[in-house]
Length: 337
Image (cartoon, rainbow, N blue to C red):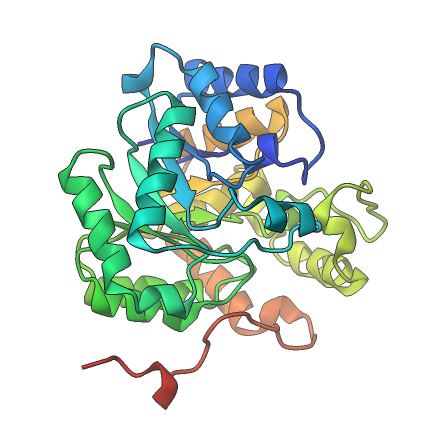
């Protein structure tokens, strides 16, 4: 599995600009053939199966050359919910064993394969964490050969600390967790890594939002304006202004590489991180990010300086982050006996 992977939501959802299927397929093939990327991450919700169909077309006859991950858990087959959906509002979740098996079979059909390398439950909440039959279903699918590794993806926003912690405490044999983590947004990802080290010895991490929604690409200014269909357009202006201020404190990272590459190297300095999923939406980014693997690692001094900056919020005073998910351990989150 390549250290830099390819998250297909940029190609299939339209949230990062529109891509035709032909352009998406060409980019996916180029990622493998020209850049050596072998891990491709999808979800059934990405374009209601579009991402999976794009992967099937891109790698037809080459299944053994790629590692494919996908995610299930949202009921994308509920027509009423689809029609009522607006923007990025979440669909209803279904994680009963019968539905999970149905959803996996649908993914296999769209991917035109008989196995999924990595299956994750999409945007897990505490309700799903505490459903042992869900995780037993994933174990059964692994025994049957339909999936090769199983885990959970946490999001869609920064948060979900104790959902991840409790899941690793309950299901010690979990294979992988996908989470948001980057230089600018280190909490709660760092705590989740530590929980994995303590509770789930075989769990590795695949990281999304590696560049803080593009901030760590180093190309924004206070005057940046996002296109109408770009999800970043809906963020408060303070996100942009404060983010640009933080980025300026990281100039020391750009002496040997781009800031975008340094952001990936920071993640890969953690041994439990096996792959990163930067948002790739053009060929220039594809080349920049994929080449990070072959570049120099960050030095101990650079890592220590990042830690010092993070401890003082990169010299920016702002309102505390409004986290989603369970961020404090309380009586309501105690493990069931």
